[in-house]
Image 1: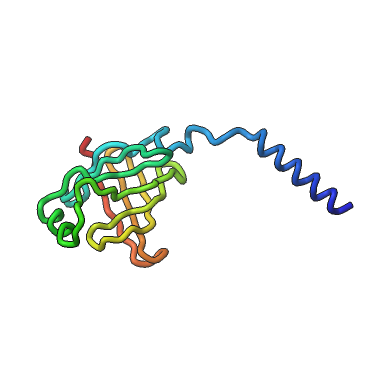
Image 2 (image 1 turned 90 degrees about the vertical axis):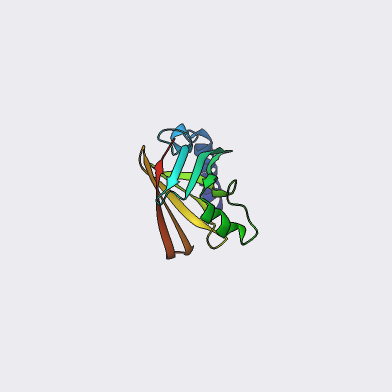
Length: 142
């Protein structure tokens, strides 16, 4: 009898899930406030174009100063064209979570982006969970 009750409860939950409304446009990274555009990092050494990439948001370096390009080139990489923000998905109002490529150490780590207002974002990344975190501020230039 108990097994039948559990099976019935599971069937009811499955049916309710099928009838529940699907995710709204608000959970779409491109819906509502967006961080799409071109952003300059705090010291204006790098510009990143943020845009949709499939179901998520990504950010690709479109310009970097000579010193920064040389630092990355010394490790056999090219900075311009590198995707520094990858697979960012909205996790809350004005907040996204994804992967951040850190050119200075040639590592990809977990990160977050917060849209502070229409002209500024804050990007944070952590090496080991909550340890070894860095925060960078970006200003919209386009």
